[in-house]
Amino acid sequence: MEIETIINQGETLALVTGNEKIITDVQSALDLVMSIKYSVDTNKIVIHKKVIAEDFFILSTGLAGEILQKFINYDVKIAIYGDYSRYTSKPLKDFIYESNQGKDVFFVSTKEEAIQKLVTI
Image 1 (cartoon, rainbow, N blue to C red):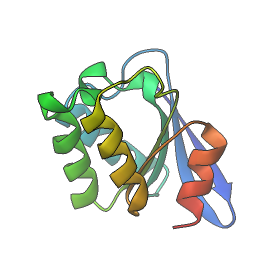
Image 2 (image 1 turned 180 degrees about the vertical axis):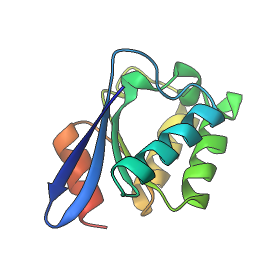
Image 3 (image 1 turned 135 degrees about the vertical axis):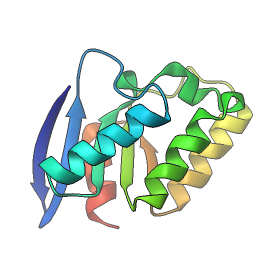
């Protein structure tokens, strides 16, 4: 896992990348949050969806809800970028739409879009 610090419009963000799954369960998500809070000193995370377990995107597992609730409890804003076109689940599409209307969690297509979402909230 690589954590890069991005400063954009006076906001500090953590860009998380890697070749393996970084978020696989609630504990790994909390570990990521704590690593970022202490190493980068920010509560804004940009992350590619490929490093998140696929179960996160299957809402019936409850994983997305549990993880995102922890992020909100720890006052962490996250933008997850990637291609969501292959998902056909209406509940997931509705979840993504509703998340994007808020100020804590965003699902977008590109890294640049993710950065922009987090610097404008």
